[in-house]
Image (cartoon, rainbow, N blue to C red; front, side, top):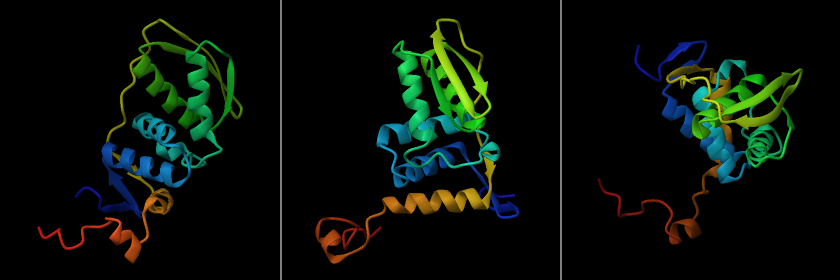
Length: 170
């Protein structure tokens, strides 16, 4: 079956890069600052999308809270408590351990986690999930957020250089 073709109840298979790019755009459209949107997009390499109960692609939720808590722990101020889906927390933890080459000491709670500290121990090996099947509901939601980053087509936007105009003739 070809990539991107609907394979079950509207679900689509997407590459890791496609998922990361879409999450980055959706997070920006959802109001996350660029750096936090990039953190979320990188963490999706380890994220089991089927285990999410809420989308982290908007400001004021886990997409903001988890990276700030991890930064605080890295700076030595902790412990920090976060509220989020366990799957999202695990993805951020895996990404943080891979990039810091340190082990995060943390514990799951009933509605999130408590991050205690980073230790110089070699972390467990984390394998990116790669190509995955994404539900049509999640794809639609992510596309709806991503489209908020688009500039509306107007005469003034075109006059300002938006679009290809007459120069795009390939």
